[in-house]
Length: 327
Image 1: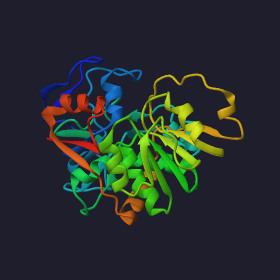
Image 2: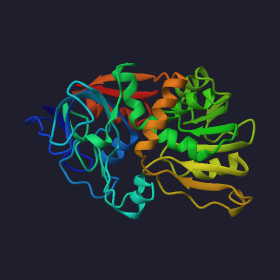
Image 3: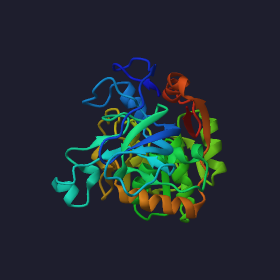
């Protein structure tokens, strides 16, 4: 197999040739056909997440085919197409797992962070945490749904049922969830980096009522806002944008520090909440909604060996929609 390997925080990924991984009990070996590039991959590469054991292979929006399996796997067959998400394992024993909150598990493992991921030609994954994808749809188009879509969906559910929805950061997750929100009959207001004409154009093409810079004011008070960009300075802006009783959802696993802000913009029962990881049930619900709503992912495709350049472009805000690597 070939893989793009992270050997130290901030280091460029290194193309390596390795033996094909051997699946253990309960595991699958998957031949990767496409892997989305997520902002969380940047947090891994830049060393912004704790407890990374190097070397590690990033990537957690994986689409591929089952090539081999270990003892005890009966739910899938060789040749089946599967999706491998961020959540790669939970203990099943802690209070959170027993209480239906496996996304908050005390002893989780995450694809591309604490276990090797999909910036490779092959990877091994726990079969229980792989989603059967069937044969409908294109591998590249599906890949961003495995995190941008799933976390976006969890964030949208947490945002509540409000009609006027603001999306701060209109990248991979934003452009997917905008389509779901429009399908649900909501009105979408897209907030982007200042001068990001391409993202604003994409938002409007997907049915957004309005698109502008994050510092601008939406034409109406928002019922809820989701922040996908990992920028703490957006929190006060989003709180100012939502109505009394509105909700601001922070969707990222990492965010720069939130600046101090006056209590008055939180008062009147506005709420500020975060989203952590996903559950397997989120995946079941979301893939059903994705099929019904006719999501079209806007993707730019790159060969696996160009992963470093793609990460640099993502860091600089030069990717419109989602980037996908192909071996």
